[in-house]
Amino acid sequence: MMKNSGTIMSWVRAAVAVSVLLTSALSASAQTDRREVRKGNRLYRGDDYRAAEVSYRAGLLKDSLSLAANCNLGNSLFMQSRDDVSSAEKLVTAARDQYGKVESVLEGSEHLADSYYNMGLCDMNLQDWKSGVEHFRKSLLANPADIQAKENYIYCRKKLEDQQNQDQNQDQNQNDENQDNQDNQDNQDQNQDQDQDQNKDNKNQDNQDSDGGNQGQQPQLTPQAAQQMLQAIQAREKDTKDKVDKAKALEAKTREKEKNW
Image (cartoon, rainbow, N blue to C red; front, top):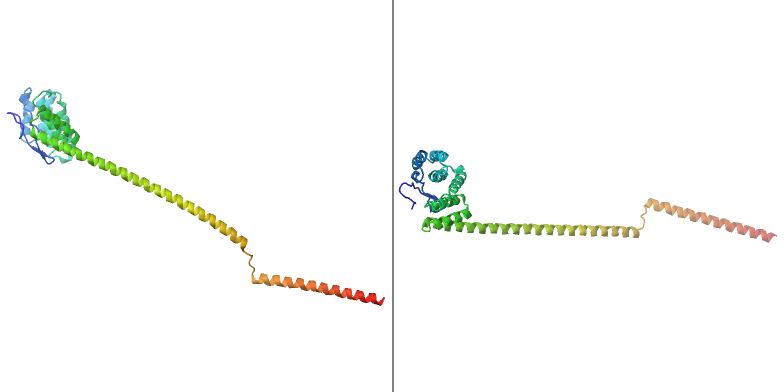
């Protein structure tokens, strides 16, 4: 149930699948009686948290150390986050910061455990599990009998472990993916080098075949060129035969003259 002591206001807040209670707003009587703080408490009880915030801030202008104004301002900010989804994260963060401002002032106070509880509740809404574990742990150190603080501490610790395991798995998957990409790149580079070497060998072989083929081939003649060569050969043979016949005739004539002498 809620922490309630006489004039302290109380309210219930469920968050993150765990029944959690934000500590009650402090009574103005806990500090110097301030009109603005009392007005803020009335507005707070009427669920007008935005107007209550304005009154608490006005009270802090007169007494910046007012525990009631500081803590109740944090509560009013937190409660506004329920209805203002677009600004919920900003409001909860501001509420947590507000509780932290009076942390040192509350040292030794009966409200110290509640202050840490409030900050832990903000952590849960922000899914800041690491901070939640720490704040609920401090709340339990100040008030070991707080069952709800213990439940929220266990819940935050479990969520933190899940988050850490997930981060580790993501890192491992990323490393595996990077390694696969590197292996694929290495294989592509190797295949490319092999293709280049093969193309080079094929080109050299083609050049060798071309040179050898040119050396073994005989020039090809067209039928017309072959006919011309044949005619030239026949003409040379006829010319040679005429010269031979002429020489024989001259020799025979010379012998005949010698006989007549």
